[in-house]
Image (cartoon, rainbow, N blue to C red; front, side, top):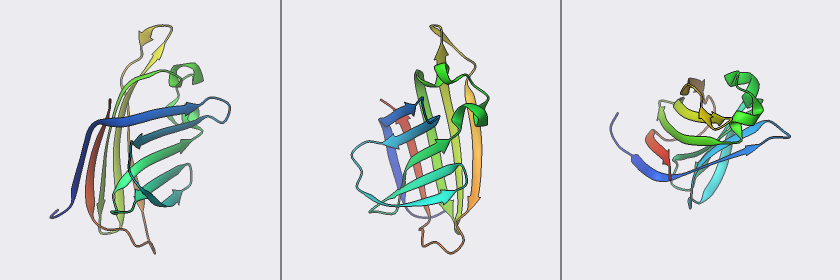
Amino acid sequence: MKGRHLKALGKGECIYDYVNDLLLFKIKNRDYLKSLDFDNLIVDIDKEGFITGLRIFDASKIFNIPKLALKNIKSFRFNARVEDKKVTIQLEFIPILRNKPLIKQGQNLVREAIGSEINNSDVLCTIA
């Protein structure tokens, strides 16, 4: 893919809402423009057209991880790529339960952004 890349190494933030089982990964200090809704996943787009946030609903069920472990994520990395209105996200993170890291969790999420104006781009984000 030609074109636009955003490297946000060390600029990530992870927030978990225990009550609503909502997991948020985002890049700090980006100007929000809009969101794309894909069932249990919402992708946030900034004013430059990059994917800068992921909201995952029912996260404990999707990843099959206890909610307590999601409250303490040691590290994460996401690589979000948009190519021809197809959104591909590679997500890896290490949750901590009872002071012990669980096995690295990962998920590849692929969604079609049909009817949406979203530009081709590549984003790499890691936690600070």
